Length: 136
Image (cartoon, rainbow, N blue to C red; front, side, top):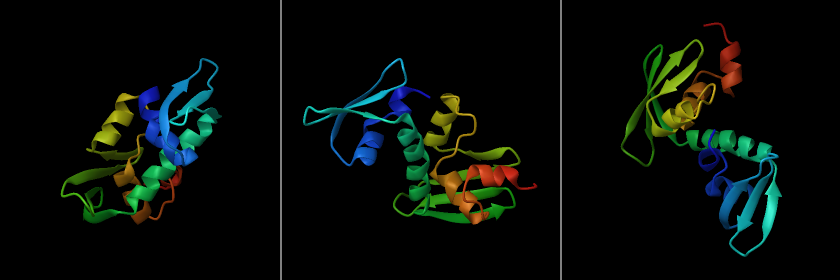
């Protein structure tokens, strides 16, 4: 996944609870966070991975769901008017939102956006891994 999408300034701000100027990735895998006050700290890449999932799971709680068929959901934000479609498939979930499409472009093995997490919760799953273990 690209540095700009995964190791973002917004993610670094959520992780550190501080104002961040930029994030840079070193060849050895270290993530440097440059704060607006001039200080620099390293942040564990796993913290960014956890934030990536946690942030989407948290935002999924704001999604209003309507099950259209056994394998199709309409997902609407409580704030925005746009409605997204999530398709339930045996090997994962598919959404037509920009976040899901970017994750796919970035070659994330199984993309999962906030809309997909909302559907997973409706299906009784706490994670995509839980869903993948279910008999279809």
